[in-house]
Image 1 (cartoon, rainbow, N blue to C red):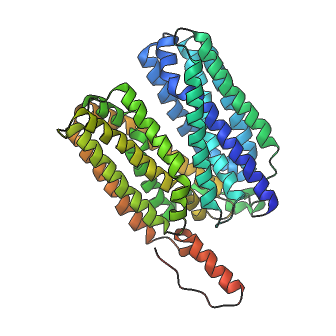
Image 2: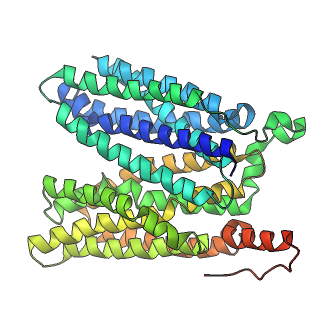
Image 3: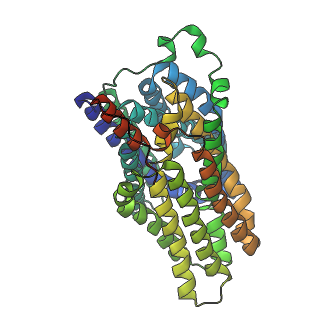
Length: 428
């Protein structure tokens, strides 16, 4: 990595932390703000959450194309300004129409930030440093969300609309501060569609769908996000309250345990993960999450004490956090390594689109199951977790050494560059 790439990467990480910090101020309190503080009711609050997902699904297909043509930085700056305007207007909105329009702008901006920042990380890293860069991104995102939520919780007052307006104003200010920080980034030149012959710019989605490994990774990604992230605040929370008798304070403890596991374990896990085959790391995550669902099953369906049920439920969230820490330096770099030169933005946007679909479908399926059909809920997602392991091992058979074991490919390249014989690929 060159000095210029390192300087750009530091600003990108600052940007990730700032954006997560800003989101942390408002995300935990959005439902309360719309339904109770503004008095617009539970239905409008639910529609706001749906608008976030719909806005993301609308803009992401176009975001990938824009990133490929214009580069990630201009797209990121436009997304940040859009998100800032959405956040500020949401804090001032007093009726349902204004709230929904503001949520659409904020949701669209947030959605585009993800693939733009991911593509910037790809452009400023090498195959050897990419896993560590994405691990740092995930660590800072969770730290920023946690700190932002903690501070926001001390500022907010459900009896005063002005306290929520302040939160949304702080969120908007973080996005605008990020505009200033990102505007100073000097990105290294990377191929764009505009740099290539005109024919290569056509049918980019068709080319992506023709990449069988990427299609398999997208299917795997959908299952990952559906079976874990899509259940955190919907099905699993409902199951904990209804089946396991978990209190709201214990639910908060479980969410904190998830974040704490990520923050504490991320770099310890990285040392283990970055010398293993990516497909087998993902397969291992499926097994860890299967154990997490078994713990959840004990919490709600076992006959232990309430203390044991609460401990098992908190352990479920902690085990999910361990799996997330293993995925962060694995899945995003794999998406980048599957992308042809100059197409990282398109591939990052496609994977973000899959993630949004899973996050939209997951709560819709898991919520009713978790609230009323307790045993089928646990069994269903236990099977999904085992399915992750199967899909990951199948994907591994389609990946090249450079994609599945970049550390081994880099070592081989260094040996060849020094005039030696290529080494055998190493499996872990």
